[in-house]
Length: 141
Image 1 (cartoon, rainbow, N blue to C red):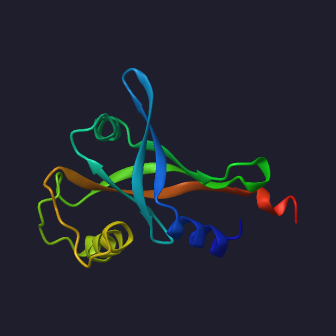
Image 2 (cartoon, helix red, strand yellow; image 1 turned 120 degrees about the vertical axis):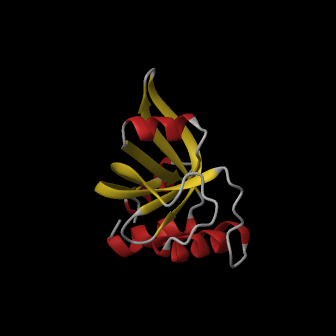
């Protein structure tokens, strides 16, 4: 995919698969996400195994993909390190860098202007060290 194709694809997709490394090995879970063109934002339960893994070791891999038949397969893999942004769990402290992220996330997943905070989730930002993408629909073209 070109960068604009990748950005459009990530904007339309809703679920990613997040891989972390914990004391018992790899842990992979589905999660909602937001791509802002430079970083991937994950709104994660702070009591989850995923969160504990990231606090212990911030290495992360994320895959967003879709397609049923072989010539429909497409996706993006992002690897990097996850960093906590804001308080954890998120209770609503003023964090300027989360204003746009929370608004965009609220629109994408709930169709509202402001994200309702449940005091159970926190924000993780992944600045990619590598991005790989594929679009097998182009093979048949």
